[in-house]
Length: 152
Image (cartoon, rainbow, N blue to C red; front, side, top):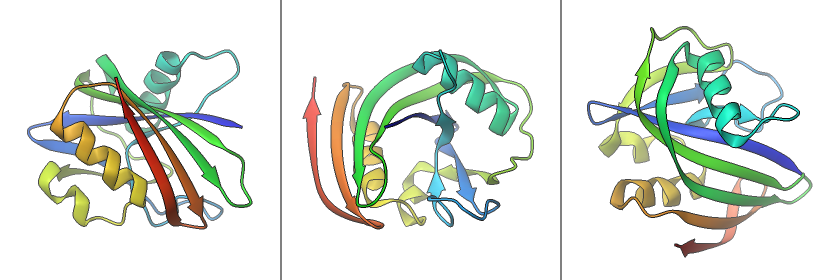
């Protein structure tokens, strides 16, 4: 099982997105995703997202909100549990990322990017309301074959 975090950092009606282009062996290669990564030993979800955002962007989150937990099952890969955060309070200067290219994308244009199918579903949910939710997604390769969503 893999534990990860992702943060959709917001500014002026845009999300900071990462185009994953720089790693050779990368499940996300060619996709646009939020900022985040895998837990290190002993980390909480909050500690992980603050560290990952700092490492990948140079930005320090000043506040953030846990919005969802997503369970992924992939044919031939380990299950993944991802904690989704949003933030609109941060400080620092954007730096280059060793995993891909960072770009501020208007929220209305994010759906035009090469996203995972499940990301499109939960990004729409993030835009619509502030309720916490969980989601389970089953993938075969990069094709979403089923999902369920629970609101709280």
